[in-house]
Image 1 (cartoon, rainbow, N blue to C red):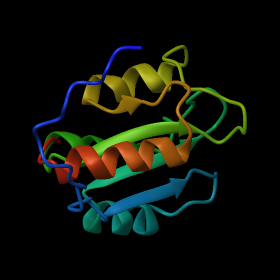
Image 2: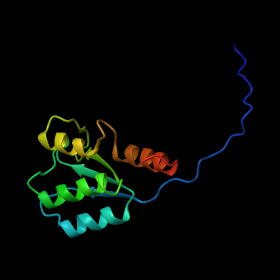
Image 3: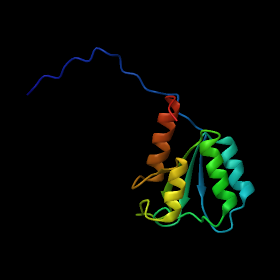
Image 4: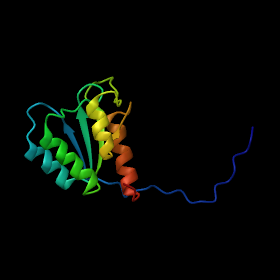
Length: 127
């Protein structure tokens, strides 16, 4: 049995978690005004997209909101799957387009995991 090294640093809990994180469920009838309102108030946005990260590129209004949020306003946007056991990959054209703007693909992370990580990382001052 190896005796653990004595920790000289005092234990602390990080409490400055970022709370301004929006979760948007993508569906065919979502309006650009509702979409935009979430983007205006949040520092980070989690988009629940179809299947493996498929986003309706035909909705140019929504794509432009995402592009502006990431490139002009330094918002963090992450794509997660709507499927319970789904994951996000850049196999769909829409994922490739959004990834070029700087959108993050969550791969196999759950919504809860993404929100927890975003709140911690942004709270620490990273984008």
